Length: 207
Image 1 (cartoon, one colour):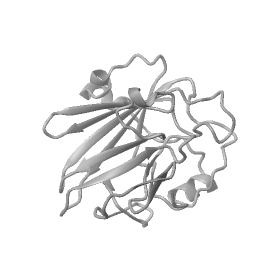
Image 2 (tube, helix red, strand yellow):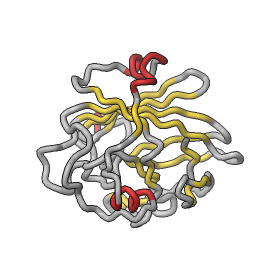
Image 3 (tube, one colour):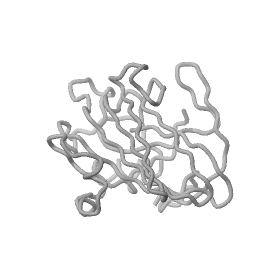
Image 4 (spheres, one colour):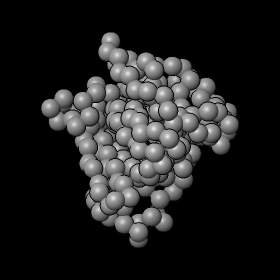
């Protein structure tokens, strides 16, 4: 994948679930929305600036700004292109090995429907709904369609060595021209464009 990717960080809302007991019905209810906090899992300063302009090379932080023992719920609202339906590929965390062992994805639409998918680095191919080796998932968006996604992240692999565990929480919109995973190529078409608050062009209108 490219060294410069559309990272999604500031737009993420986080909810710490210390005991891992919250249900999706609870965390998506109106009474829980005020419990979400802005993403602050990257140390302010040079590292956060570089991340926001998509120039971050891997260098694990000297201190973790999230609880590695907790489950985290991540909320993101996305809006489709004005003109075209398309399918988009996302990765949980910037690097395939520095992600979570167990991931639940819930996708809600304006119609009230909810789709649920399971994946994660610790799951076998038979256990995964998203059949990638790494923590990728796909999101289909019709023109101007609004969807809210919730991710449940469990087991941050804290026992692993540097580079094999996540040091912050983010998403990546994968390269939609050449996506490589274990020698295979996955192609999706160009379409959605937006401008991030730092001015760089992107392919998804996430708010």
